Image (cartoon, rainbow, N blue to C red):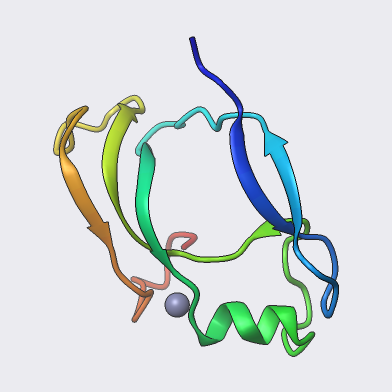
Length: 100
Ligand SMILES: [Zn+2]
C-alpha cells in the first residue's frame, strides 16, 4: 500500500543529484508525513550543495519549503488531520530548546 518515495538525493557537495526510491518515512511522535505538491530549493540547500555547511546530513533530499497534503499524523498530533493542505515555511527561528 505504501510505495517508496521517489527522490533526488544529494550524496556529497558538488555532486549531481541522484534519482532514488527511498523508504517512505513513518511520522514519529509530534510529526506528520506530507505528500509534497510543490517544493522550493532555497539558499540553505545551495550552501549544502556548494559545501559551505560543515556537517550536513547526507544523503539529503534538498528542499524544505513545501506545500503539500497531510498523509499521516504521528502520535500526539491533534492539530493536523489526513487530507489537510499545509504549507511549511522557511525556518526563521526556533525556541532554542528543541531540535529543528
Ligand atoms: Zn530555506
